[in-house]
Length: 298
Ligand SMILES: [Zn+2]
Image (tube, rainbow, N blue to C red; front, side):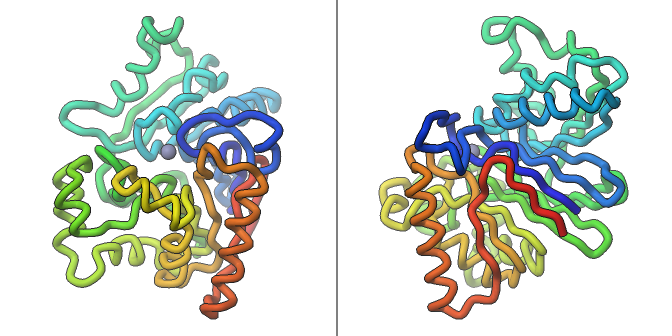
C-alpha cells in the first residue's frame, strides 16, 4: 500500500514562502492499493496536481474518490481535476449525505454556473455516486470503512484495509466533549447521539475505529493553547491526536490539516513538541507531519 500527499493544509489554500515545505494545498491523498488500484481521499486543491500527474501517464483512470465532507477545503479542487473531462475514465464518488444535501448535489452545487463555467453533467468521464453512512464497503480488493466524526454538520473518517495493511484518514475531527456537545449544537443530532451513548470516554468510538492501524492520518490543526479559543470549530489539537494514536495502538501517526496561519517553522515546532511528548510518555508509535509531495510505502 502506498500513499502520496497532494494537499495537507486545512481550511484554505496557503501558498507562499512560509508554507513551502509542509504545503499550501488543501486535503487530497492518492492511495495505491496492492495492484496499483487508485483511491483518492478528498478533493481539496491538491487534487489538481494529482490530476495532472494522471493525465501525463496517458492511461485511462478508474478510481474511487472518497470525500470526508463538503466543506470547501475538501471539494474545492474537484472541478480542476482534469481526468473528469476525459471520456473513458470512470469515477465513483463516495461520501455522506443528509436529507437536505444529496451527495451528487454536494459536488454539483459548487459547479453551478454562478460559481463555475462548466457543470457536473458536462463532464465526459463516467461518474457514479455512492452515498455511505457508517459502514464497510468493498472497493477493488480492499475494504473501505467509514465513521462519523465530530465536525460541524457532518464529516466522515475512512479506514482502508487490504491484505493485512491498513490506513486511517480522519481529516477533520474535534475531541468529543459531552458538555460542549450540549451547549454548541452545530453537529448533526444523530452523530451527537451516537457519541453520547458511549459509556466512558465518548472518543472511544474513534480509538476503536483506528485500532492497530499501520498509519493514522489525523487532524492536528491546533496547539492546545490555540484550541481553547476554537472549541466547537471541529478540529483537534496535537495532544488529542497523540492520545488517539496511543489508545488505538497505531504504528505511525501523521499530523495533518495544518492550521492556515502556521508557517513551516510553526509546524516543525509542533512536530518537535509531539516527539518530546512521545518520549516523555513512553508512547510506542512513530510520528511525522504531512508534507506536500510526501510518499509513504508499506
Ligand atoms: Zn477541513
